[in-house]
Length: 382
Image 1 (cartoon, one colour):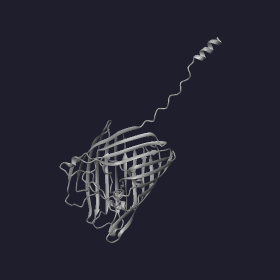
Image 2 (cartoon, rainbow, N blue to C red):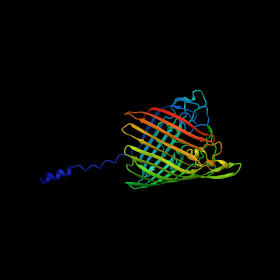
Image 3 (cartoon, one colour):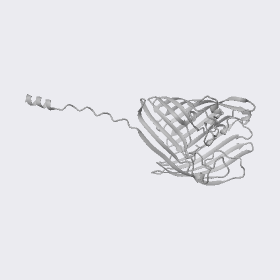
Image 4 (tube, rainbow, N blue to C red):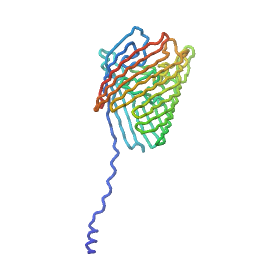
């Protein structure tokens, strides 16, 4: 019996080594919202399909049409093991880049890069490189009518997408405290040529924009409540017949929040600063005013959204940008006040529908000019 036991032991095969861990998987995902927006304006605006302020034309120019140029496409890339952290990248484009000067050009819009970012996330630190909203204005209202230009632009919402490098340090679980810093490309917000570009007053300063932000979050990480304060400083170099070659300071202090209460959420931002048109129209798009001095301004926006049942959202909000009157030249814009109300329906499947009513009131030296804008959106997601 002992001989049989030894023979049995001697014929056993050695244990197989454990299988190697599966390789880290990189993923690529394509997303998009194909969107048609029908619209009507009761008077002349700066832009018919996505207006942000009323024009001074008092002839009561009305118009109605439809466009597809708020269609949005995206590519997402993830890799769980890059430099010891997790990598995610995103390219976000739409067709709001204007149109060629040709017959039928309204129906053949140009592709536009919105956001293009790459981030590496470690346990407590994140590094971001690319084109993204300014750190101090990292929040936008929800709207299917304001995709190409977010709602409340030039009325309290600073939103420009700007090349930057950003670092975030975050710690905590129940309450999460984040300290952020960013260096951004300096831009004045002035339009450039159709093809070639020249240095604007921000670039001529030879100095980057610098921003910082402190954020406190709580609740689920994928659906958080947050409050944050931020600071921005930059420089603009211009030439004025009165002041000569001058270096102006662009600066702002900001506050933003998202508060979640069951099916309801409150979104909002506020700021006070000067010469901040390069952040998305602060000072209603005016950096320099009387005598070449920086335009001082204050503004903000707020929006309430309620989701009473799956697939439905009702909401509304208002925004205002109110530059200091003595800084604004006689031909400028003295105040812009915008309110909106909207409803969205996203039934099961890819379809999306929305309706928004927007009222814009812009103040000039000649008085207040008002426009009512109606927008009906329909499309599908993939």
